[in-house]
Image 1 (cartoon, rainbow, N blue to C red):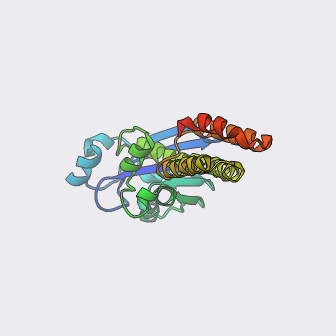
Image 2: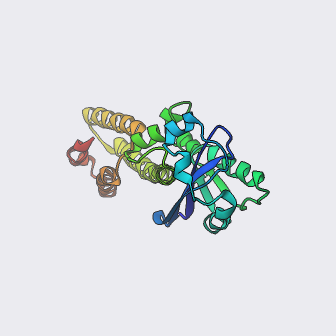
Image 3: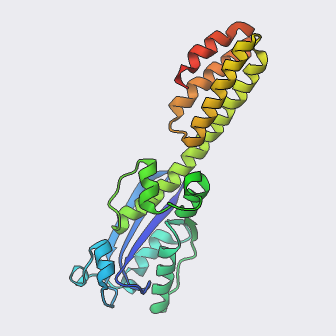
Length: 243
């Protein structure tokens, strides 16, 4: 997947007061290029904002203004898919462009917060802030640094894509297990297989962590189904000890 991830920090509650921009470009799902710059917002710095990101008025002395970085933004963004976490960064860019009478690139925006809400049930209604989602997916970063936040938003999207792929494999596993249940002759083995299937489904609903955890189950299931051996449930029970 090719896309650009972007994040901004602002000097004050006015979303046009961009004081830092971070961009990370991904090609085939891997980080290919990154860019970060301070921006002189030509505006005041609010104490609350400074507390959040640590950028002071003195930090941006000599930094380019937003119009002076617009060419770089166009080069990175252009017509690409651009990932931001919530609408904040997208809105800030549009307001900054409007402030200076500039035209925004015709890119396609993708909200990684919405991706998280649709991909993980625990984030459907709450807790989908960037820091919390990244803590869940195991990605560490320095929050409220524009480049760090941009890369974190990208990791959320990539983790969601990986989870979707793994779920497709998992569905294949479940289909194999159901097929094997129908082929097992003995009642106690059917019960045990039912328990295994329930346990696997429960674990899957919580987290599909790695392909390595799923793949052995696929291989065992396919081997037993191909063999047609009704006594093969013993092999299955041994192989599914990882459940």
